[in-house]
Length: 331
Image 1: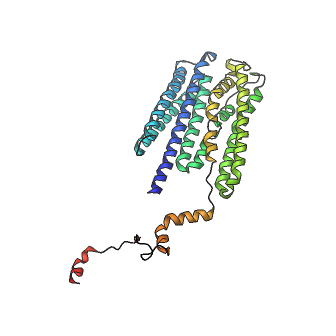
Image 2 (image 1 turned 30 degrees about the horizontal axis):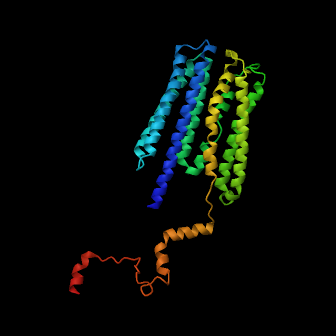
Image 3 (image 1 turned 180 degrees about the horizontal axis):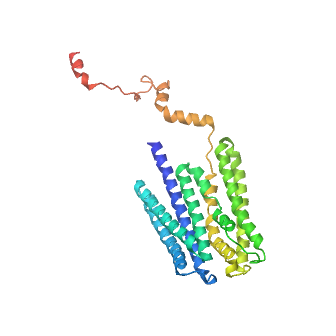
């Protein structure tokens, strides 16, 4: 009974993590749509179809956010865990993502609008990483998945930089901005993935490594925050030229200013997951023996016998086959 209860609690944590990923995903879509709407005037080649796509992305993100908040509140606060409702909610989320992906691919193939192309690419990258995170959560143990999917990294930005044409001369420090965006997200991904692998394959040393991990985690998040503040300064100071030629880097930096704080919130579940309760191998064996062989330990106790204990209760139960009543009556 205790094992089943623990498994149900672990599954609840997984479900909460899945909802958190979809809520974060929805917020990203809202900010992408919001910034795209603000930059529509800079791209005169965007027509009604492109404006419709951007508007659908923005309002779809709002609906998806509200849907997942309500779904999480209903499912997680049920007395008995609502598994069927969760899988229905997950199926509806997945259905919405697939429909928007089909719409996005159609838009990417037929759109002359550079802004819409950027929004489409960003949406496709985000959707891929979001579904990958959900799969990791459902397939791996809670602690491992929790540390991996909440990494303070947005690799969608990195892919968007590599797949977009960024013209030279759009900003005085254009190369520095690209390097900061790529390095902050790539270093975070590599470092936190390395932490996760080390904890999995070095379980006996994790107590000694835990404090070091926490210290380096603080250093990495400080580095990410510093990069973020510098990029915000460039954007607010008007360092990036606002025209169609520089639309790519303008769109990337503006959306990053909104999405980076959401990404950095992942440091809290990661730091919390490093708080281990350490148990030695000998202690684990004793605990298993106490749980699995409690009845045997009672009977082996020399002080626990019918002669020494007047309240002695035998841990064994004699079962009599009722079909042999005729034998007992004969006797």
